[in-house]
Image (cartoon, rainbow, N blue to C red; front, side, top):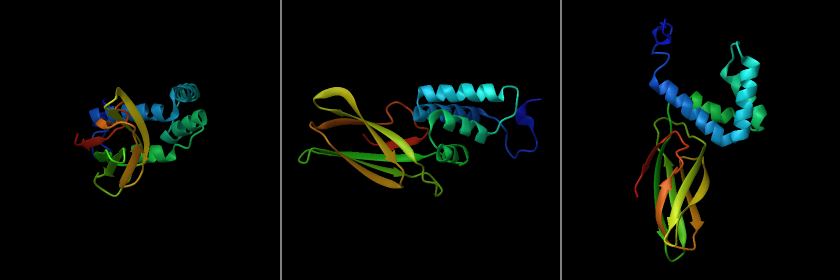
Length: 171
């Protein structure tokens, strides 16, 4: 019978959110470790646990071996927390100092602060192509400043849709 009919759980075991969140977490993991390491980890995991039971920790360990990265924090914050990050982003350009200032805040409920690799794309008056800043956003509020040669006209938070988050942003 369907897995969602199991009675040992307080809520349905699977639903659309379960599959969507799982897929998005795998997408973020692939970006974090790189395509080659991700593919190697998936293939090794599949070969090792084909027709067997496996735990999330065993999957994490195979991905760690393939990538050479410690993924405990990644798995802890994405799989074992009941919330997703909510990011508030504001920016301004100081024409006198030729600086872009981006202020980011994590505003999700609870006291979990996520360690987020966040991309910000900014566009200048002189160049229609995006300039990408890769930021380590791991505090409740952080300010990032960047020297720019030309005035910034537009800013986009998470331009490649990598992060599973709600982003509140005023253009």
